[in-house]
Amino acid sequence: MKKWLVVPLLILAAIVLGATVFREPVAWAAQSVDATILGPLDNGNVRTHEEGTANTREQNTDSNGNIKVHEQGTANVRVANRSFPVFEEEATRSFQSGFQAGEGGIDSKDLAPIRASLITIDWDSASDNALLTLGSSTGVVRLTLRPQGGTREILPLTQPILVDAITLECFVASPDCGAYVNLVGS
Image (cartoon, rainbow, N blue to C red; front, side, top):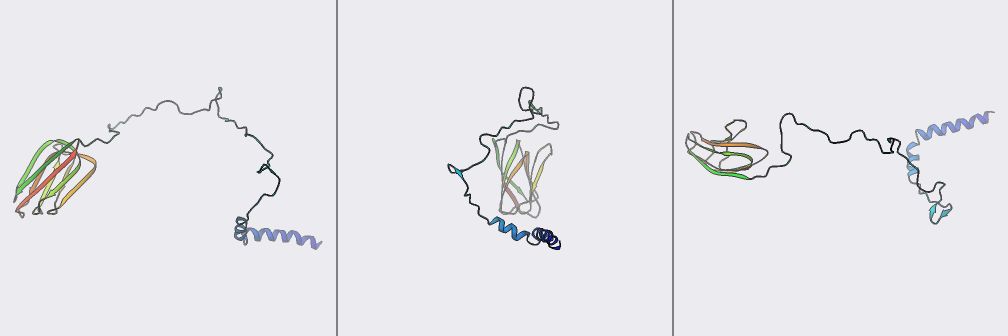
């Protein structure tokens, strides 16, 4: 009777050891097994009990057999806060002008409004103490730049700004200030 008790204990110990201690080596060994089918083949194919196309049927249908759909038709979309273009506006307008101001002076120009998407500024070499202000009479956006003398600044804007006035202001410590401004937009 004691011999029959040892067999279930050995099986239980094998299960516990296989599930814990030898789990990873058993998994690696199972992955390296290369199976080759040697059984009866039917024209090079393995024989199966099932043949043909599986008979499947959609269960979520209406009385005519069409698949049920929850939402149908055209959705109404309303933007409550403002309208916006769904395409990028092409750059169709440009403005180019030079600005020059003496010590403590101002050079200002009004222009036809342009929605600038690209601004380039070529500063004179002596324009270290100057401010260039691009803005609009509505005052919504105002861009003020302080130069690094003799440099070019290129400002591509992802959101165009409205510009209808440009002012170059030269401070007292500077003999002469100058800049050439180019706006591209619509």
